Image (cartoon, one colour):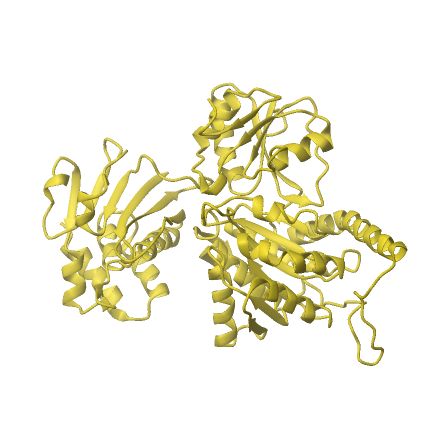
Length: 175
Length: 368
């Protein structure tokens, strides 16, 4: 089983990103679950979602305590939450940032400027850049699921073509 | 069609298949997504129900009662304080023998204010005459909702059915869902005692003790008959859709020496614990109790029992454990865990089994 913990702030689309990750994996023929952890949510508060991917049905509902991958949609959360807690020794980190933040330097970390991609495409809702579709492109590049399944998940969920475009740009920009 | 869905959306999708004439509902966390989605269906024309947005849960159930008594299919959904607020009408629905189907998204009761999973809300309605089933996956939420209509509306039952799913843990998780098309699985509703303007008679006015007693006895008789209807319905469902359900979901129970009994999503987590325990040489099995009313016949034999209750009856004990003791005559190790959404992992459950002390009660996270 592959376990992912996703950190974001309320209003950034973290819950939808988690669903898209599960859906893309599902379209790859895997079993997948996406479970947002709901606290006293409000816009801007740090929130966390859990994604599990496996070759067989997933029976676990509890939280993910030792993730294989940590995804951070907002690097300012690094100052508030220990996003690396429980990360497996060979675990990976993906951070939305123009460069790797100092706090993440000792980890197996990759970064991509999702915010910049969203702003360039004017993919903005209620003043917030949309991060949940470009991050799917970045994760496809990391090999979490195929590029085709990522595109399928986005097209199934959103009609605005800029979402798919943002994912493809992120796919290309990821090193 | 295979898709990815939340528990809440699976319930709504099943309701669309069942096509009730009337849905009356009031939103409440974590149930809101169910009634929002049903409202979407009505708005986009894919569901022809009359959707009545009411001002309270009491009114939601009252509106369902008013509609149901005319002989049409009805549905509502609620949670926690909403269920308690409608409790008077919940009793009325069963007493009036109305086959209303309700989804209840199990949530703790305040104070302290808490929106996370716990079963005490629905278990406070266990003596009302409603049938109650507890589900553990998104697929089961869909399937149990479909079956609930057929069971409730069977002439041998004519009692309301409550489908329970864990708040957030199941209501908000995304899992795969086979949205099987119901076609003729739920026959058209024929309610023998529906009100009829040609022979205007009602039911529910002042009733003598002697007649009232017979009416109550009749509820219990139908509750006992519902045992057969549930079995028939689950068998018919399995032969049509290939997914099997029963009173309990048993996992590696055949040669087990110790059984974990639980309800809802903890019952799935318990299966993972069973695999861990088996690798340690402990012959464990999981028996997830699905139906609470009518309460199933359980045959634990000489196996030790570890019962996990995500609920509590103050001054008495865990409700599932108490019921199992009463019905089987066997004592158990009663673990109280998961109240108010307390995190309970498969490792925790394996620990309950390793440290079991039959005859004792253990409050997880508090007791040593």
